[in-house]
Length: 477
Image 1 (cartoon, rainbow, N blue to C red):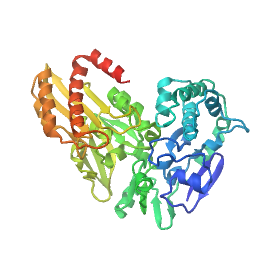
Image 2: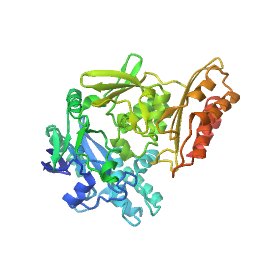
Image 3: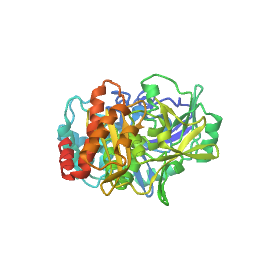
């Protein structure tokens, strides 16, 4: 059984198929068809809804892709759809801004834009262009009406007035806090278990090693929405607070595998600007609000954007099975395409980084679109240079092999050599022996190799001619 607020209406669902997405639940079960299905893969944003949950003395609002969110994620939250925005029969200020600024074209994508903008308004004190672009980057308008939509966002944020959600915030928070934890979502022989603690998770996963672990679900949901498969048993980890903790222990930064990317973004941006910049291009705000760093590693995608950075930083993983824990270097975790060193019943508990990021760490992502797109190549670079000599080197890439992978031969070409352009060119040539990338609809093999080599050259420029590197970055933006 799960309980949640649909705007201000308490919903109690005792028999829901856990494979049901929030999108299908809203449209088919509740008849709320304002939430649109455009892609069913989290790419277009037409299905965007907002989830609110208690955060201290207030509510925290998050935009999510309803097409990638299973109904189990609704428990204990308030669900807000475009139908809920009207204020005493009048348009919400966000909707009015879309009208005033002519932000609606054909209208299919408009509800998703409105909900992203509503979330932006709730989380902003005033309009900031960069923040607005990040908030709306996961919503695609096929009529190319972005300029008036951004103008609408500016109006909505700068002319914000209290609405019913503000007035009801205290009552809403109290009602959500009164909802007890859920343990199970089940129907028609399919189940989703909802453990509350790490010990419960460890026990359940040992008992059911065939179960699919459900964190944000932004990748797992594609099994249902794109491949039309059933997931008979899932174990959702979203209610386990211990998996969301971040702490410094001595010379190590410990990141819980269940921490969402949006929660980690300010922390990792302060850890190192390069990490923060790349996370800003990691999918969309809706995906970052759901997806977790641990899930991005565990799905072992060769184009996952988190792994190359973590490999270059020599990250370690804390893996748990039952009551037993072990540490494994991330470089030993990926065994093959979508294959990892996880044993049956074992899961990632923490990602461990050095407490301080190396000064000379850099990372870049190359994709067809600047935002909300999958990498053709993602490169991360971490060299230790002392008195003009390279003492250590870690170069890691995504999109270049069946797994995220370090360029070991290229690293050897660098270690012990003077830090100069000729050395970098030798290492760039060695990348052709480290990798034989494939060709697909994102990029050809030759293009990927050239991009990887040029990213290494860019790293050299970034460290030796920083002003030129800044100009390159500005040109890309």
